[in-house]
Length: 431
Ligand SMILES: C[S@@+](CC[C@H](N)C(=O)[O-])C[C@H]1O[C@@H](n2cnc3c(N)ncnc32)[C@H](O)[C@@H]1O
Image 1: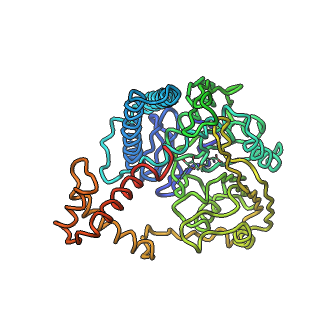
Image 2: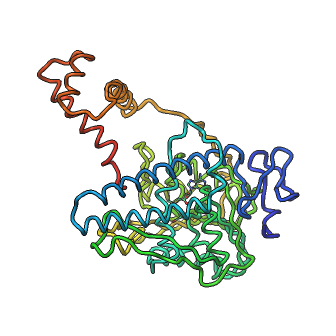
Image 3: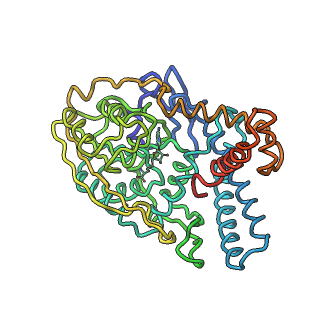
């Protein structure tokens, strides 16, 4: 761990200072291990690592099933071009899975937490590596230029929240040798892989697209490598926002790239958690979508609402926006263009330092929840009578016998149920 980091750190559970001993960090409340050389400063490291173990194991199981399915499809009669595309995708996914399992093998032996079905947070972020380390990305250039303009050559402690595949941290640490850059990430796959790249390892990953531009562009093999390993002005941390392991007023600049909008917290609440650690003349740089994409209508803020919320918290707030292609894959047939807002807040005031509400985990009874309940109850009952391959007439018969549907409507509903289940299973998101 870099020498300059320890004085900035605090125990995320008790806010006590930390000491380093026997390969761990300690407060009187808790000990924090290192994982692949990265301090593991989750509020409850034992639970966090178990949860990540479950997510990673779920991902490995789901991905293995998908690969097996592709293998089966590639062996059934089809156009030669279709077979080739499926085989390429299958090989790419298998190689990525082998890479992931070899770098995260420790997590595969944790006892899984059974009520956590999700592999989310692993799957969706593979593309970040290609954008950060392979493609000539205008998007990443724009982020780097915005942050660099504000850092200059000052001596600063800079914290990057949700550092992902590490491309921005790497570029900043290189360009601003006077600044100490801290990359904070909760996903061990991203943090460990980014750290390996920043230290100079060459890693092979396969980029594939489910909807490629052409038959020849279904996949591409990449050797990911940094131009030059980083020196002593960068440090990676594993930690879970909003439980930040920093002393109050210890950080000069906090950077939040595509971050506050993706958390399970309202945007306003998330921002407030990041402010107490800023120095009095500290700066917050945030950028991401011009609208906050939350499900609750009152949280779907526009740029103007974001700025209006931040203005009373800082001495000065400036913003600008740019239209950029997001994760602009050279292999994909479609491009996603985003209006991206860049905000700079300078010198948080006393109001900004007021402790953020802890936002207890709460499920709100909304019209969507009522509907969800009703649909799930029905679906649960119908799934209970499906235990082997089933066609419309057979399911219709069961609907009549078990649930009292009349003979005329039963086939209609049976078909709807089958279509709905197929949609839920296979069509909701591209695999
Ligand atoms: C939308 S991605 C953005 C990644 C990167 N900043 C970028 O701009 O490409 C959000 C990142 O935040 C991380 N993240 C999400 N929730 C987090 C949390 N509670 N604590 C720390 N990191 C988190 C994700 O793993 C992911 O790397």
